[in-house]
Image: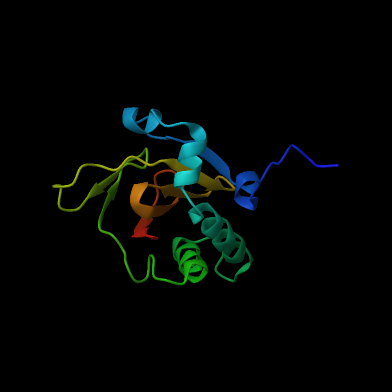
Amino acid sequence: MQNIFEVNFRASDILLDRVLNPAKDQDTGRNRPEDLVEACGIIPDFFLEACHFAKDSETGLTLDTVCAGMDNAYQFGGFGSYPWKGTLDHNGTYQAANDEDAPLAPLARFGFESRVFCYVYDYGVAAVRIGLDGPYKIARFD
């Protein structure tokens, strides 16, 4: 007998709080939810792994330990090698430091224990933030 129902779940789908289009951007909102999730790729998995390791570490869930954990999971740079300058507003919209580039609205926000958040943008850009208005780091994970 063949199973005609196939559902694929990843740990990040279940263990992280996910908010699609948290900035309520009109362009991002035109996408189907499954397309936004797909566009986030495996960045949420890196974030979940980093949070679990950071939580069990001596330093705990800090910005530096989570970002280092994501870099370790990715193994090709990230926050340590390719940090981005710019700012995040309270909705997670990224504005480049040069102000010449258009703002990037997040595709999704992933939360771990409502304490640490990861915003994922187009182009493999990610930001990790402590709390919803706390310190953050931004990098590219392509």
